[in-house]
Amino acid sequence: MSQNAASKPLVAIACGGTGGHLFPGLAVAEQLMTRGCEVTLLVSPKEVDQHAVRSLPGIKVATLPEAGMTGDNFSAFLARFCKSYRESRKLFRECPPQGVLAMGGFTRAPPVLAAKAYGAATFLHESNTIPGKANRWLSHFVDQAFVGFPTAVGRLHHANVLCTGTPVRPQVHPADAAACRMALGLSASDPVVLVMGGSQGASGINDLMLAALAALRSGAPQLQFIHLTGPKDIETVGAGYDAEKARATVRPFLTEIELALGAATVGVSRAGASSLAELAAMGLPSVLIPYPLAADDHQWHNARAFVDTGAALLLGQQGATGGQLASLILNLVHAQATRSGMTQALERWHRSHAAELIAERILALMQAMRGKPWNRPTISDPLAGRSSHAVTQDGSSDLRASQRTA
Image (tube, rainbow, N blue to C red):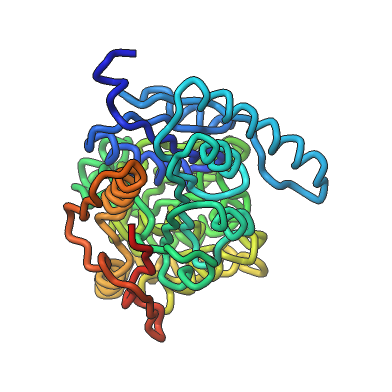
């Protein structure tokens, strides 16, 4: 390691397992690197992680064993958790970090616990309206907690919680739709429906779209489709579009999600917090179909927050039909005024400086723990320097951060 690299503060970001944790973590990593930090991403062995990090410039990547809670086999979970903890300790013994950020879930907990043994500043980010069990537990061990929704502030029992929004990568911003469509092999002028079920895909959404295709083709023959299926359903979904002779780009996964979002006229999506943050960043009107088995039904609550402010439409998966989905999509495709209203409503949910704010707070606390002056954030931060929190009746962003003094 060069002398210059050794003098830089090292921050480890535990963000693997799903795209909903990985891509917000990447957004924070980029901001930390622009501020002179070395960054190590701690990811899982899953293909979504390994594919996304193959060509990241300037970021070190370490793969840790999965430590997630699956089923009721607590003994197996504890064994995986301990193995991940030991691997984290080994990694940090060689290169001790000054800070560690966990992007949520039990898989991200072992690095935080391991890092505390080396005196690192510790952080977590909870992106959903309803914090998961892992983050509720982990919040007792970190120095600072960040949340994506104002309503999550009071649900984490921690004295230092800040509502930042959920970070998105800087590439995710409104773009020229025609150019994005042509880059994906579609017509530049015809409207596009983007279907995405998260980084692993969603068979429930895939099945509903196949059931809706005939009605969509009849109601709007010019419609084009971008469908991100996940690895399991790629052949079935592709065959469905071929059978309807629809112009479609069907992929299992797309790293350059900004192209798909930029090309789209209307979206169909799960309601994971990261997906919602990307929809808000792009101002894309969408039909949200929450994952019905999400822990604490958090995707439903995420979706309700958007729907109640006019930023999206909602379709529950259980009992839904292809005809219902087609009707919602066609209403959006044919109603420019409705789409414009939803785009305006999405602006309130877009926190354009989320990644910057998190990076600034990480650096500030690391400096404070090393006995250096507390640096105020260099970006516009209307939430900084306040000592209580209040959430308005509609859950809007009248939020003050609960802060400890350094």
